[in-house]
Image: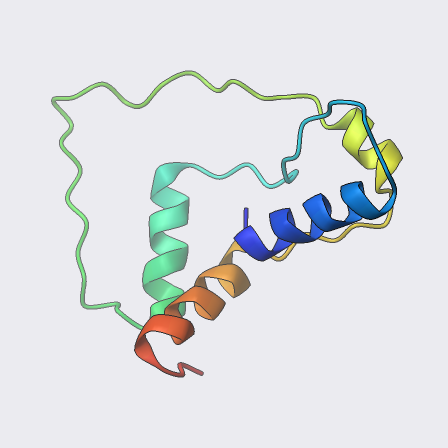
Length: 98
């Protein structure tokens, strides 16, 4: 999740005086491999090769959270896609990429 989205949700919670607890998460569900591939692609670093240690466990089991309350409170909230969020952060540190 892009930090700017989370900050916007906090701002809206304060403005709307919401006091109930709820989970904040996107519906996007990506593997570590998919996230790494997106980051490599977005930043134009296709020359980077990821080597996976196949002797190690294949990650942990998914632990999805319910975002039903969030969707009820913020039915029109649109999260920034991972690729765009990475591009924003990368640009802020290293300069513009197309």
